[in-house]
Image 1 (tube, rainbow, N blue to C red):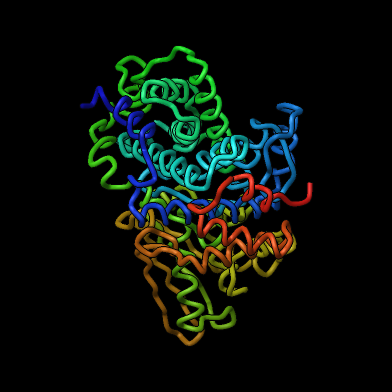
Image 2: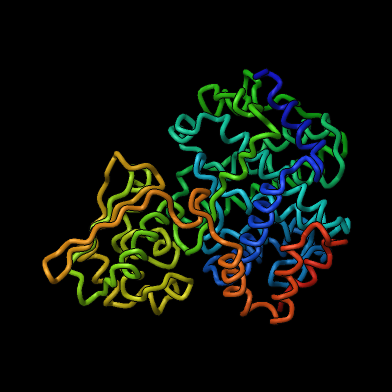
Length: 451
């Protein structure tokens, strides 16, 4: 079976139908789409967005594809820029078992092809399901700790497969062509944690989207590639990027247990590994009425992986480092009782009071008994008491999911500066009833904003 992992997954992605997808999984796909659109609209406020927009605009001069909250670019340009927009301000989804953001790779090429070909909302939903399940299934087959020990970053490595699956499903690939697309996607798999702390980690996502698009369109031209990329002994994904992996996990209960349902969403901007700490901080300020004037010190305990990534930003340079900083997130929630993009604008993250409190009154330490999603926050008060809150599952995790109403609020918050009110409400209705949409072009017309 392990030698059939690529073929089995290709057959699944190529033959998936709407009726094969359980109702709960369909709703999960709609949530992924709505969250990705909200993140993309917010992404216009990213510090580096204009640089990626310039690159995307230079790829080709055609204008057949829509930019979420923008105007038009080429098929490749829109895929690249929409992928970056979703991840630009660090609040998109994450598949926690593989620390991989999925929607920036899968949804942009799916939207671009579905718009170009006037495919229905039902077709789009099936493509999203095929792409997200492909990405996460390949991820669970990696043996993630071994993959991570080699320094690989999931979105750029496994994301191209999901992008190729989504495009291939929309284009009606048979299983053999889909497997070829996977071979071409794997030939472009790249991205390591050497980029950590820089915007390049976000480029991994949008480049993964474009790589998957290229893989699928080239496979459609009958370009020859290996059709067993996952388990090829010489240079296959699992042999080269991991320790041989667990190929059997790729196909275990495939089509019965949906791994994409393990993708978590983020209610707040900031690193995915700090969302548990932020959840605990909001419990402190809302349930225990903690305020800055009552707080002498805040102590944050994170698991080792989260600590290694986010404890080194007691002082930050720029928006991206502030988004990664556990110190800043704790200080901002305490002082503002809010954590939106407003807390990550220059005038806020350079505020001397916040900077001083984060550096002098927030302590971040490692507790190796905590998992990547757990956190403990303890606040020492001026009354001589200590209030401690433990978060097992951050807000937005599969075990603590966001409601549809919360996702709608997130969309409205970041759409209001890019879209007219009428388009915002119509877009929300379209996504909630995606199966009834006759053409994806209708949705993309609603999502375009000012150039």
